Image (cartoon, rainbow, N blue to C red; front, side, top):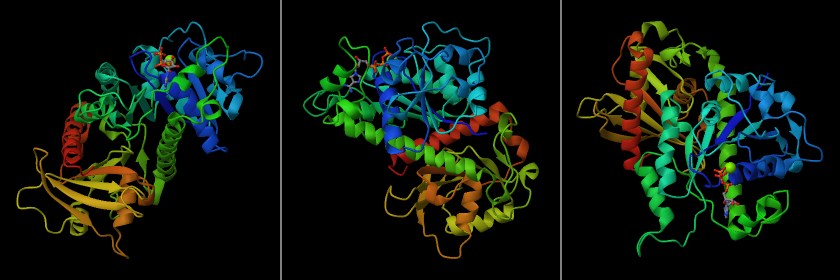
Length: 430
Ligand SMILES: Nc1ncnc2c1ncn2[C@@H]1O[C@H](COP(=O)(O)OP(=O)(O)OP(=O)(O)O)[C@@H](O)[C@H]1O
Ligand SMILES: [Mg+2]
């Protein structure tokens, strides 16, 4: 059984380009990876998905059936441009379950490839369900109000430790619009978003009258940018967006494949701090979880576990043999994937004190015959060649396992994590 990689397109702000991005993204993804099933569904009642993808007669089933418990795979209709879709519904009734229910349903859905969920401009049951089910959340922002609104979406994901799945997509950008003679509006938005610690795409979707025209007028169908507005800047930007999504998908697929890498046992279902706990020490491969030790956490995979003290010393010997002249609380390892800064991946060890302040940063040279790559693969659940922009945190001091369990421990480590990633970002190191 397979489960889809879910992409939610969400914003509480109306008219920011959610539906335009969601529907066109489906077309571009399919165009770039013909063999990958791409499915789209919308919680909105505007029928834009149906207007772009429906072929012939209206399917009997719709998204309303999904909410009543039908299996997702049974609701899918083949649509135009090779994209599969679940028909929209005029009136959706939220099921009597918490929004996390959708995640469980999609997780055991026998559905391959990518699933895009378009949402309403309101943070209701449906949007929250889409956020919680998503592996990647794209939030189009076109102005300051949309940026401010994004905080509510992030809050939902912070609660479940998934805030790093959110990416802001500057949308409906007029590249010439200026705040003043010095600053363009989209540059200001980008700056303001990064200030608030958001991940922002480093490209944007331009405002284009031609693109606007594709969804207006009297025609009952909506045409994709790929087929009807290829000569606009938006064409290249949507292609870039689809490439970004595929890169995230490949990373996730790699980490799903490798979740038993090196024979490591990962607990996926246990609650609280046990979630995605790797039971073996990544260095020696012997059981470490119940003894505690040096706690580590990989941001992308959410894998966590413990290194035996002697094994930690072996790791430190490779990562930061010099140490720092002040007490180190945490080692933050950044991994820049191949292609980001050069043809190969780049590893840098950052030493931080208890206040999250950066004490030292040292690039690591990975030498032939070193076991470091294998240890890191065990911690992150993927090979370094599949890295994109990764952050792995390792506690410098050992601690018992129970210190890392429960909601309070998770929140306190999440605070530490945010502090450090912010510090690294401000220093231009992550
Ligand atoms: N890149 C673009 N250039 C010009 N117009 C655009 C662009 N993207 C979207 N639009 C137009 O902006 C309007 C809002 O877009 P869209 O419906 O995609 O936003 P939305 O966030 O889904 O809205 P809602 O919150 O109502 O669901 C539409 O008229 C659409 O055609
Ligand atoms: Mg919409």
